[in-house]
Amino acid sequence: VNSPVRAFGSVSEKLAPGRRALDVGTGRLDGAGAYVQLPPVVLYRTGDPGLSFSVWVHYRSFADAGRVFHFVGPDMTPNGLSERQSVFLATGGTTSELQFRVRNKASTVASMLNEAGFYDAAACGPAAGAFCHVVVAIDARAADANTLGCALCMEACINGVRLGSPAHGQLPDQGVAFEGTIGRDPLKSDDEWNYMDGAVRDLRIFRRGLTEAEAFAIG
Image (cartoon, rainbow, N blue to C red; front, side):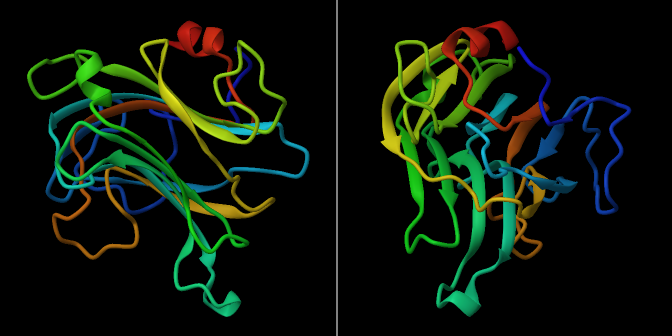
């Protein structure tokens, strides 16, 4: 698999100020205040064939909409929209549902991929002590049998296996630097809402869609 444009999770990774109570190498999140502030990163550029995220996840409990990662772009208020551009991976409420959401400046609504029972399909939930490998992808190329993300659709893969049905997707704005966090919603205040209770490691960002074979190879 080609190298990701950014990888967060090694002990040598240089993080922006704001890291609190979290060794990003082991990724311990407590669900009540621990998170990592990531350096700004451009998620999508003109001509890129898509966008994918690869990450290892373990949940101790399914905290309410607990964020694995959450990236936010510039304020969209001048365009008549009340939210900022955003890309995040989270749980659906306090369940094992996967939610992957993208909203760009041109859209009045976000694209959302929801997969009920996603984390029940592998041993990475509260009853187990293991990590699961999760890949979420949006592919701008024509769909084929091996493409994880269909043509501008959002799909998800766990431990190398594609699950569920694709949802219509959108890509972040081109050339925009996004601020990101691991373990919480960066737009919320310092309370427990949207903190993840579990562990995250080895977050990788690819500016293209990954094939199912590539997702399996990373895992």
